Length: 98
Image (cartoon, rainbow, N blue to C red):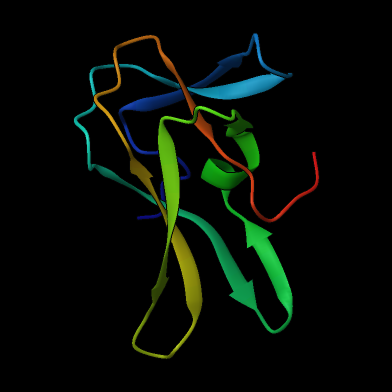
């Protein structure tokens, strides 16, 4: 069954910008939170993970490029450090101008 966010995350008001992704519980460094973006043809599509994560120069997550069995390019959101309950998850944007 499709779930837009892992159980460990929620969307809340962000001090960075608008809404953001927040940890509902502690999340260990190196955790794969799921697909944040995927490439269909020439378009890059954001999932809820990719759509609600805010930019930070000192980000606590990173996108890692993957390819599935059919060769479809997608990116997983991986934590760079231990994330505390209530902490906002951030990413250094690479697809968008800020």
